[in-house]
Image (cartoon, rainbow, N blue to C red; front, top):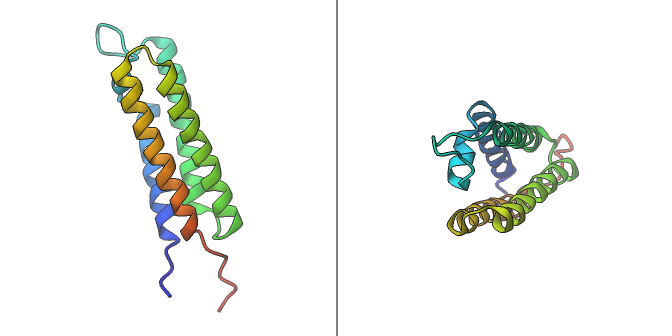
Length: 129
């Protein structure tokens, strides 16, 4: 049988890469969410919080990428899904622009769904067979 535990690993790596990019360049998240000033850049406070979200995504993404198969990987996935659901709800209800609320909620919700589905492939640890 084909092992598919690479699926959550790839999602984790993608999450970590996006998180690192946001931590370095907060405008990558701030612009699509509409949280920028008239110059197109996030205000200092928005940049600080956005960087925090980026670092959170690096940590949760790396956890998905390296956790052993089975319960540890499913736990890492659950943490990632919880973060994405929180983003979907927070951005979907709190952003100032209706279109940004809709788009941000959809993106976070889809990512939560993909990560949740990847738990089906998290498998059990290989017992040295």
